Image (cartoon, rainbow, N blue to C red; front, side, top):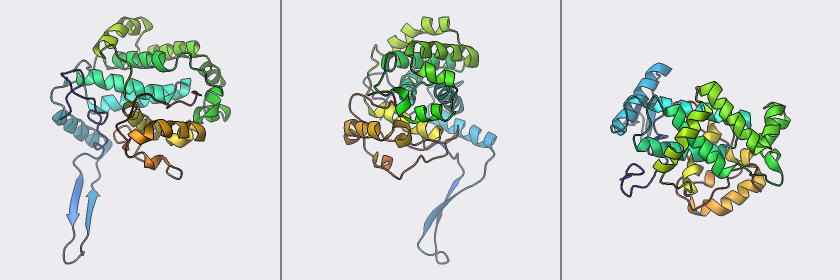
Length: 287
C-alpha cells in the first residue's frame, strides 16, 4: 500500500494521485466472444460528452482519495499542469523542471495541504522551487538551442523575446513570476511568503529519485504533442537513458520510431515509466 507522502514512511508513487488510468470514466464495456464471435475478448468505450466525462472522472478520483479536501478535483489538478506546461514552453522553462514541480505539488496534495483556493499558489511555489533548484544558472554548452525548444524558437514557435530569456536564467525566473501574476493572479510576494512553508512540508529535501520526475516528464511531453526524443535531442536522450533507463522499467518505448502517444487532453493522458535512481537529465539545456 502506498501511503501519502509525508505520513509515516510512505513512499511517493507518481501514478497514485493523477492516475493515467483515469481517462475514460465508467464507459468501458468488456465483451467476451461466444459461439457467434469466436474466442475473442474486446472492449468498447461509450461516448460521453466532455462535461459528463469530467464529472465521472472527478467522482472516481474522490472515491480513490476520500481523505483529500473535497474542493480539490482531478480536473483542477490536470488543468493546472496543462496551463503550466503551456506557460513553460512559451517562456523557455524546461519541461524537466515542470516535471519536478509536479512531484513537489503532488506530495503537498497527498498531505491534504492543497485546496481549490490555494492550488495555484501551491503549484506556482513548487515550480519556483524546482526552477531555482534545477535550472537557475544552468547554461549548457549549446544552450536551449540544442533541443526541441530551440528548434521551436528558430522556427517561430515561440517569440524571439522568449528565446533570449531562455538563455538568461535570472530574467527567465522574472518572466515566470510575471506569468503567475498575469495568468493565475498569484503575486511574487505571495510566492516568496509561501516558499519556506512548502520547503518545510517537502521535508527540506528537493532531491528526488529520477523515476518520479521522469514519469511526469513523459506525460508532459505527450501533453505538448512531442516525444521525449524530439524534445531532448539524440545526444541528451542517450545520456539520460544511460543514467536512468537501467533503473526505470518500461522505458523501451522511448526508442527510435515511437512517437508521443495518448490523448494529451486535460482529462486523459498516456502512461509513463516509474522507479529510478538519483539524478535527472530531462533538460535540453544541460550539457
